[in-house]
Image (cartoon, rainbow over all chains, first blue to last red; front, side, top):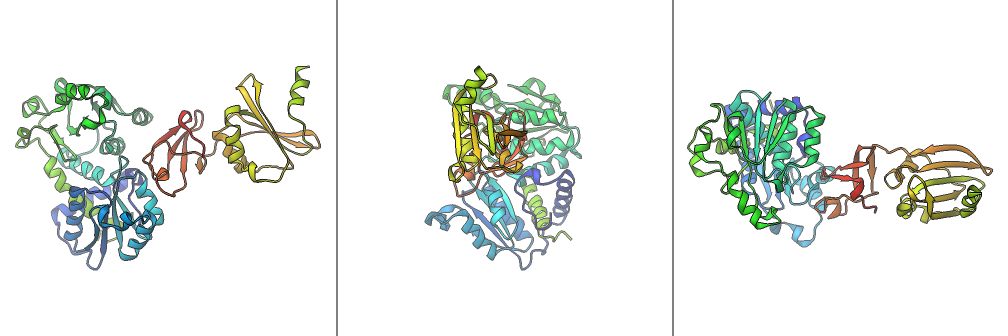
Amino acid sequence: MKNRSLISINDYSKEEILQVLDLAGDFEQNPSRDILNGKVIATLFFEPSTRTRLSFESAVNRLGGKIIGFSDSSSSSATKGETLKDTIKTVSNYSDLIVMRHPIEGSARYASEVSTVPIVNAGDGANQHPTQTLLDLYSIRKTQGKLENLNLFIVGDLKYGRTVHSLLMAMAHFNATFYFISPKELKIPTEYKMYLDQHNLKYSEHSDFKDIIGEADIIYMTRVQKERFSDPIDYEKTKNAYVLKNSMLENSRSNMKVLHPLPRVNEISTDVDDSEKAYYFTQALNGVYTRQAIISLILGLDN
Amino acid sequence: MAKDVKKLKVSAIRNGTVIDHIPAANLFSVINILGLDHIDNQITFGTNLESGKLGSKAIVKISDKFFVDEEINRIALAAPQAKLNIIRNYKVEEKKEVIVPDGFSGIVKCVNPKCITNNDDVKQKFRVISKKEVSLKCHYCEKITDQEHMVFI
């Protein structure tokens, strides 16, 4: 992983994924270490994402590194017409690693080809967000004690949700069984079902999950976004089918945990927050440890 | 008799390459991909010819031009069933078929309007993930462009 960019979850093998998770576990035990002393990390956020940016910046600060960058493109030379290539080539002179969020899909891969320092993709449009996937895996392993042979319920926007697609591909390494729960307009795309078929993995599609919740080890909730629906009436009909309430968790397994990449809107009722099965805020904290692990492995500072 | 009529439609060449079984709709894409509009060789072509296999086909004859495999295989996206006849002294010396390569660059557009290749000065690059019904995965945005949605540059 040393000096290699992280653009897509597929850039890491199963062994490399496990290496990140193990190291994240070390950082959870001892989060503040001065191993980035003298290193400069650039965070280039061409579109705002406060949560992801703060998580990365917290990780760098806990490692003793310095941060440069911008938090939206209006405060960068992109507004003056500077190309992405020029921005990346320039900033790679100023930093040891670049964390980049950009609305255009494939921009992170392209940046990694023109940069002289490694790039960590912090989200490129609806394409990839690999550090989110790694923190999801860390959270799943931590709550279940393993990654293998789990029943994973994925609920909400399965068509456009990039976290869903990356998580699916990563969990394919671990023989997961997938339960896809979505409105018909937002079903999991055929190409991902083909991917699971090719890897001989089990999956089923559902429009509701109240009756099968007892099968779940993990419920991964995502936002159903109103703007994805061509017909607003369809949205009104389906939006409440995907609101997780505390009462629905009664018949769930004792090991079951609820995850969500956040931010949530109304898909998890606030009465779930106090349940021991709610894990989404700790999941966000796990993002800091996971990003500490990724940055130190890429910079070769994991010792 | 029918064979004789067909022969007359596009005149014979002494030496060079005949590319047959090009889908008529993709003739100009094939010409473009091979850069035939920029070379000095004598070129004759016929299009909208009857074809049992394709319904309507095109044929291109290029005098004194012999392609290397890598060069000719680039037309596989536009003419996957194309057949090549290598002609020397008016005789077919060799027959070849095009083979779909493992990757392509700068021939088709990525189907994803939000892809960097459709928004910035970045050359398209694909990995072929299916060769039978050709389907391409974008190196940058990872979206799949299938045969039905291919737009040639």
